[in-house]
Image (cartoon, rainbow, N blue to C red; front, side):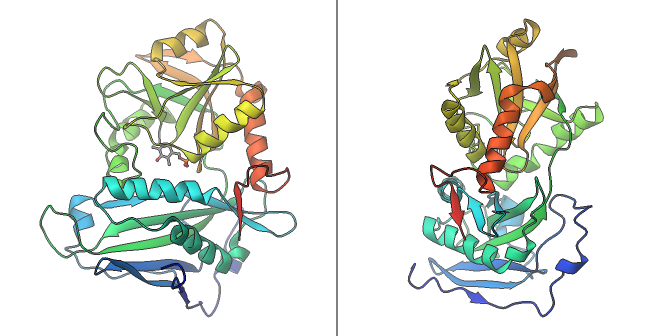
Length: 354
Ligand SMILES: *Cc1c(COP(=O)(O)O)cnc(C)c1O
């Protein structure tokens, strides 16, 4: 299939790039000129095309709309000072893409086809990649079921698509978050580890309630007893407690983040001990109270490193030390930024050069 991965490219006549206001760039609302589209028909991926970005026409009966066979990925491309363009660790997203596909009973895509499809689109859109500090090109690959059939059964046809958006920072401030003790995002035996659309649909009501109560985000806890910390919004979460990096170990209910993996790997480079294990709410709150928790942050592609200013649990507020003075989180953010933009050596080959 790789030899035959022949992507037909149809370019726009005039780019919309000159009309984009990079001073006011809302996350995920400005799309580049093109998108990638492919079809899964007769048991095969085919018709890989890069076409002008625009509406698509689908049947009102497509099963993804009714039964949620739909999932996505998220990663970013960066422009280096010398003009080089790289995508950060797309091989990891390719593996996770197929994990999501399997769990949702959808067809997988050869990892190389996933990566090459991204590279082809990013190559066409390289002028759209912002060079400003903290900016990048967000890449959104996704797949959805397209059978026209009202029956709860796996679809036989699918679309794979990729959109790209120039973006700035996702969060512009340190976060005041709440520990969620009523609702759950995911459960044991569920599919929280998949980037399935339904996981996000179900998270919006509790997130909206938290926002109305004045919080920026919520911390998800285990569905059984709300005793252990799992994630923060749509990002992984980590703490520095007694100078050790502590983060919930991955499981059915936790999305295995690429940023999480990068943070843990670099933390070891920095000389920190890393603990991946169950992390109880009580442990973290006690550590904040007795001053042994120096850092708390969310880690994800969109948010990068999103530092936490306070955590509220059952109405009680626990304030973290001033996030701008935090050693670990700030060093991690700048190291990741430097690495992705080619300002420091990429010892592990995490930058896929387009
Ligand atoms: C995407 C996502 C993450 C972060 O994953 P990255 O690969 O680092 O972007 C974490 N948790 C959830 C629920 C997510 O959807």
